[in-house]
Length: 301
Length: 243
Image (cartoon, rainbow over all chains, first blue to last red; front, top):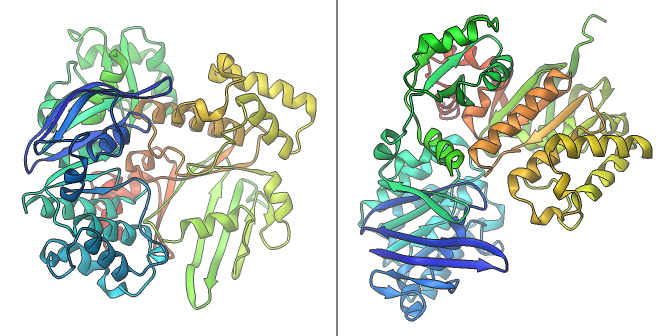
């Protein structure tokens, strides 16, 4: 279990993490969801003993990150946001190196990394610096796992990775989770939240909400409409000029819209827009996504 | 000469590195004022093609014109007529907002007086008056990206190339960024954009999907969604790239 109590971390005047409280359960796949600069990396570095907090404490499976940092480092796997393996060592050499540093061998824990490592094994003689983005990521995950950590901390493993490789990476994480390892993973992609057991939405160093993805979605407090018309740019400007409209955001093929007064119906919204002259206008009730909730919380904070 | 509104035309664009073909006979046209999404998995060959279109690298073969200029012999003119920004490199962190604007406008060859006028307009439009003399390094990422985009089109280029411009940007700022893109397109600037956010792919007028050096699909988002019997572009992308 990870227990985070009243943790704060500043860099000069920048309050990177502000008085965060959080509990992450054993064998949980927990997501920190937020944009760049939200404080995700700082919180993770505090967890893996790379930063000392200004105030508050974190215990990782009962060990304190300041007092017991040496012990924690033996039992935690950390994959930083930037690729940090040895570019001039081969795939195989990197893995062997990380195993050895932690007093283990590849053979001893091979069962744990097998699924991931086998995908890059055909290139095991290749230098790590010459791997493609997706392969680098698989190697980094293998290296973070090779000492059989109790807790795995992954900082934005899918940033800049294409949609297909992202899906594959999450499938690998689910398998790792089944071995009983607690996983904390951060991501700026809101759609990845639904793949976690629980998530914390984080913005400007503060937690906006912590819950299961389902509960977060059902907490969306307003009626949400999905609108379509021939010209979305025009539709968006019309919506912004209507005072009953609380928010209007592009969402793929739709515009997601909420109104100030939820007593109003889809037909009322249609009536408000009718006089603005939109071709092929459609108004439907929509289900909120994590991203809708996140933006709503950002707006109301 | 009835193709005046084609601003990028690629015929059999091929680029080889030794025996490896990073781009295999790409064929596509991009029209004036269009938002064109250039999608593909990591390593599919997008960056290679973008470098060629920006006049930074020569193709191995093929007939390619950008803003009316030839990518083999007129790279100087191409560079004057395009704008470029990416997530990885956009502005100088140790220069202020104002200095970055002046620097880039100067590079693009704008006269001094025009720089002054356009810079003031731009700062006002973005609501950056209070940040005019702040170092870029001190600004939040979303602000930087909005500024970088505005600077990339300050010289009113025919085409602006955006390479993953919104990676890591918060969801509200990401949408404000797309409003800037729409606005630029409405003014007639062609937008050539890559992204890993599949909802953003759906904001494009047309898009192409590259797989292993080849363009496997090209069309309007809705056409592709229907053609691949998918719910959204995310599904189309996964179906294509997994083959």
